[in-house]
Amino acid sequence: MTFDHISVIGFAGPGMDTDTTPLRDPTPDSTPERLIARIAESRDRDAYALLFTRFAPKLKAFVMGQGLSAQEAEDLAQDAMLNVWRKAHLFDPAKATAVTWIYSIARNLRIDAARKAKRVRDLPDDLWQGEGEKPADQEMIDHQSAQSISVLIGALPPDQQTVLKMSFYEDLSHGDIAKALSLPLGTVKSRLRLALARLKTGLSAPGGRA
Amino acid sequence: MTHSARVHPPEDLLWDYHRGRLSPGMRLTVRTHTDLCPQCRSELRLFDAIGGALLEDVEGVAMSDNALDLALARIERPEEPESSATVTHPGFLDGFDLPESLKAADIPGRYWVAPGVWMAPVRFDEDSRGTKTYLMFVKKGMVMPEHTHRGREITLMLKGTFNDQNGSYGRGDFVLCDETIQHSPAVSADEDCLCLVAQEGLILPKTWLGKLLQPFARI
Image 1 (cartoon, rainbow over the protein chains, first blue to last red):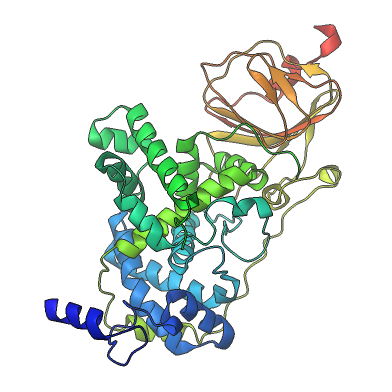
Image 2 (tube, helix red, strand yellow; image 1 turned 60 degrees about the vertical axis):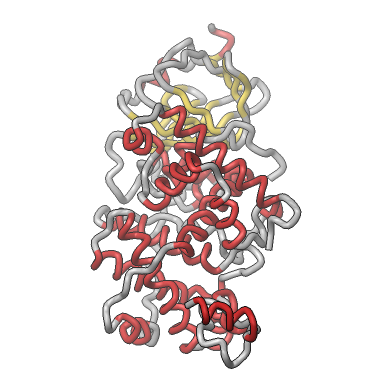
């Protein structure tokens, strides 16, 4: 692996033929954002297959971590990706990265599935779609990249990272986290508050956006 | 939408909204607040952006062998038209500037609980036992005697203002009351008041509010 790493750095530029892992080192035409655009523009099935191969396993892993069975998680990943196909025309890369948009689709599906037994009908909570935009929304996290948020999360103090990751990966309430870590609720809340504040500051700082 | 909300849902409630764990009534109040509050919408977008970044970081779990074939087959099937459920939208709401969340809510009718005061329950398809959710209209200048609350109660202001010992609340404000809060809210003398209320815990009889609300002059 060391050799591959060196060879990539040394000789292979983006888009070169030697680039055999286009999904990990995307050429301009196969970034997730571009793949979604290709689906929207021309119902591009190859683009969909690439997107599916890249994100369905992650979606499956993510919701399994939140407590779904392997089968439920597989179904949810399938449904989420189907929604990506159907809603591709609504994706606006100026507002969200592809992975953020995909996460929000999966989150809404997961919530709907949990309520399905109760025959609920609710408004889709699509914060990221092209319509209904209000300028004031634009203030903070436009154009942010998942990459830069990931870096910012990695730079948080470990205590803050822990509560943040437990929130998302394990789908826990603040009270659940307090119990799990034997911490006062106020401590959990303040750690999360500090973490969110740092992320916001980082995203609005020059260079904090991609 | 010139007025921006000043009073916001507590962070744990916003988080539970994001992950879909609020009761229907609570969810509707938070949703309605975010319709009116760019700041909280922005907070929810931050949650999605964090979730996206964490999703990107996850090591995938292999899908089953035929998953891609299935996915490619499913996209060829015609999309079922989304069932547009019929929502009752009675005429008495016509004059109000309602956020999208409430335009889509099922509000079959209203009843008058006192002169100048009506309530219009919100109906949910799912089990909403334990929470009572309604729109409440109060004519300008009414005041409630000092009282406290049994369980959590959210008042989401849609029109007009009310004041109590803790401050003044206007459109979009998310006012959370519980057992610890004792107050005697008064509706502004200048403007009628419309709010969305979600009450957890004790369900009070229909006439309770009417008995409490009195024209300001008579107090």
